[in-house]
Length: 384
Image 1: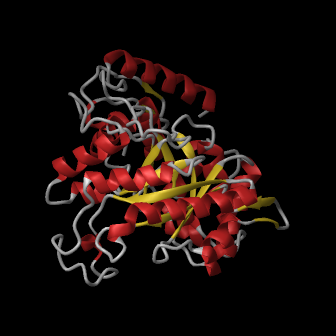
Image 2: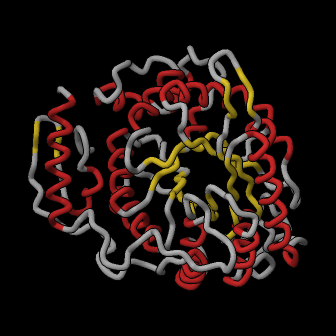
Image 3: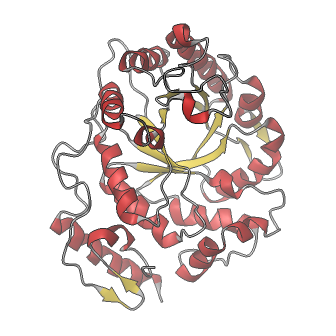
């Protein structure tokens, strides 16, 4: 079906949903309120949060987006974006709903990582996504190789209002950099200025120079002259470790080191801060046998860590780990309320968290617009 008809149907459907209030935030549901830290400036792109929700589950993920937007967050990095049952329809709908709430999605494209651009092993890991992209007519080239999976995903998403950019790696060893570079080159082919964030692993309160240098350094390969990541970042989760008492000071020191490195490469930097209990990850933090042994950070600790980071200035983004951990915690309401106070949001939307029914009966060829629980799946070619 010609894409112009799809876009026409999409526009009509979106208009109906906006008119009915489904896609509009309620008063007070904003992602742009921020607590004031005297003498410091907030990150240029605000605060992001880690999430894990299969976009195929539209009503559930939509509710969670709504809560995160109201909570003062601007970006969402969803580890489950590319689940086995997810289609490009689901992803576009997810990003579109996010954008209506004032959010942008950070796409975890490192899931597509590969050694050979001309092979097809990444395609076999995501057959439903590939099939849906090939049938969507949203990319002019068939996805037959690893390269074209990343290229077409970039083509489809890079100019979308709900896209912040691409998450090219999460605590990956430096030895994986050549594989990540293939993904980066494919992105750069289609958007040379796209945000590309790499998150290095904490190294006992010190800069992880190996990972930061591997993925953050500017260099020229056969295709491009650029750093893999133009937002180089590192996580730091000290609450529940021996560094707990110096958490704020060390957060500031890591941010200062990242800022200095990014400046030397003419790029930007970010950091991921802790809102979770390390007891959720007993296999990594073996001494964290319970929440009592490794508690959740208090609001005061979160505030002091953030303040120390912001005091360094020039950060592109500050991430928080993680919404799904707080949701599964022993006291979600208290912990979420405290974190949203730190970043300057509100605990939850005032009303209408779940998308409500809206009389949208538009059907145009294979394009179907549904309301209610499937409001997020209104886009492009069909509902599964």
